[in-house]
Image (tube, rainbow, N blue to C red; front, side, top):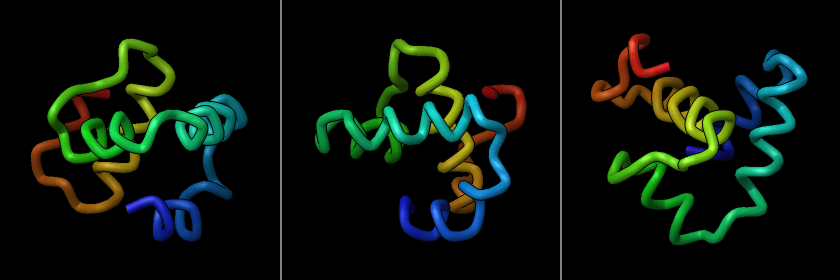
Amino acid sequence: MLMPFTRNHYPDLAANDQEAYRRLLDCEDQDIWEWLRGFKLPDDQALAHIVLKIRQASGDLGVTQNQQ
């Protein structure tokens, strides 16, 4: 999920979303996995926003615009 997002979407993100994405990559792998699989969202709103963007970009049908 992360590599295609980085390649196809990261360059077009707003600066604050790019910063949130970089912070996401510093999180624990287990947390990232749980967030990207939709088991839970980060408490940090900026991280939650970027997680939803990644899930939506990957075609996760469980993600709607209303969640963002």
